[in-house]
View 1 (cartoon, one colour):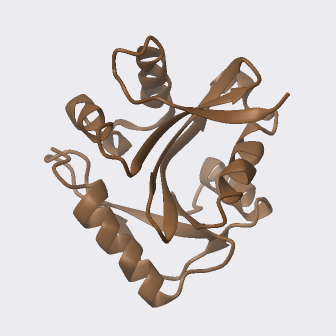
View 2 (tube, one colour; view 1 turned 60 degrees about the vertical axis):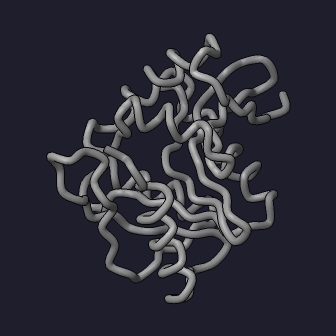
Amino acid sequence: MILHLERLTDIQDGRYDTAMALYAESFPPHEQRQIASQEAILRDKRYRFELVFDGVEWVGLLLCWETKDFIYVEHFCIFPELRNRHYGQRTLSLLQQSGKTIVLEIDPPEDWVSCRRAGFYARCGYCTNPYPHVHPPYHVENSGHRLVVLSFPKALTETAYQSFYKFLQDVVMYDCF
């Protein structure tokens, strides 16, 4: 089948609730936007709430931001029952066809799950960046959390990393809570 993305732009879309259930199941609460924030950013033209399809089968979710210089993957997940079928790899390949630098964050590889995730992205060609990175909090009662920044097709220069981090602070996290 042909993998493709379908952009969701309206919370009235019948698939929105299922997408948000997958989102809630796939990410810990401190890494999730509040519902009002998620709904508000749907109106931002730079934000892409993409449903991943293999033909007619809905397989996952790709939530990202696109600028003229890069695409930042804020959240990416495949339905649990469909994992380990190369949908993640195929989705990243589809995204890489944009020709833009792809930036994403992962937990530091300190346990089995995080090491496995780091290995997945390395096999997909993503480079680890050396910059100490703390993602701003999604909730007022939380503090930021340490993450590792990955990029494709090559590591970010310090200038490119600073540009990404400014975008993260000023745009992605603007009015998050």
